[in-house]
Length: 530
Image (cartoon, rainbow, N blue to C red; front, side, top):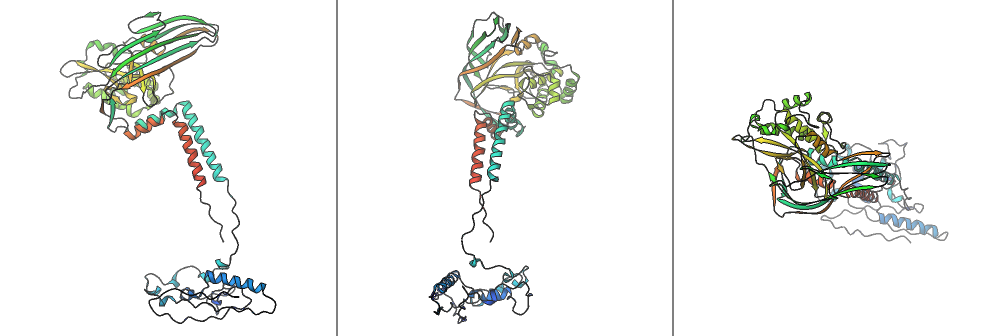
């Protein structure tokens, strides 16, 4: 039998009008749709007799449209009719009363709302849209084919990230990017950095060479670190084996080896280092003629120092040619190096000439220090190299390093030897993260011996050389001091330290992989159109 008519449980503030009675649906219709709301024939012109009502009429009478429940009841009646015995008359319940038109609802009528009337809205009326009502679609939607494109894209992105990270690590570009974060992002901004006042550390330097040919002879030159008052105290030094010869600056080991024989030298260092800051300014500085003559050995040409080169001389004159104050000359030259040259880690073992560094606009600690020293010497200011080791707190590792020394005279007489580390933005101060094992004495041969520490003669394949630093401990003091520098801000410095941290490349690749998986898993798949 037909489903009973549903009760309208809506309440109204005003008395409702009597609902208009609609005739019962004919037995051949599975559900009843009033003629006025049936789709208009494409051949029927808009506005002709029997055409679909206007949007205003549809809004006024839409209460008479069948509800979802009524539509389901009509489907049940259709099923009853198909299963009823032949000749039996089915009885249908009267349709539910029509809902009141919008005029009977409280509040302003649609015509009272601001804006154009509904008839003025562009586009076809809802009745003009062909196709059955949504309620007439029965059955589940067909399954949508899953696209493999997002998965393929994610795999490609992950592979590219892993390959790029591998290339960066192999060629040293990761260190260049770290220095970009460290220096170029916040270049020239004054920031405060915290340094321990002092530190004590111990490490071993291990050097070896293996004969791969028929035989070889060798000589090894290693600088002897010394106590520098107020900067570093040598607690213990233990070279092994005992050096063949020794002078005030170098240990020397000499000997020979045959095929497959390995020659090793191990030096132990224990040091107490102290932070030093030179508080100078232009008002206290003297002029070039006030520099003592004892520093003249640091004014001329030397191995990798080229103050007489025409390009170097012209640049030094452009930077500070009209200035007499030594402090201002040094600061202008330092600022030029710091702001115009990129850090380069894949430089050859032997430092570049200053003219090549100028052309490249890039170089490592040695390259930039030799260029800075050449520019200062061209201005009549003594400058010389200081070499040793630098401790990386993030990686807990030691590495070779070089920086510059110069002399700034005092206006009232005397003066001070100061240190400048251009690639680490350290101007007139020395941190406790370093060990000095050689200071340039003005002799170019000695300076070259420091850089070319192993010298061979061999037959057949060249020897296989190894040089590494094994840290034992590093203990910074609890006391710390903040120093204003013109280097990176804390954010850029933190990113730079994170970038060079062990495993950072692999962690970044894993993060990219996890992000790709989440994006693929959470991708919304749009439904099919009706």
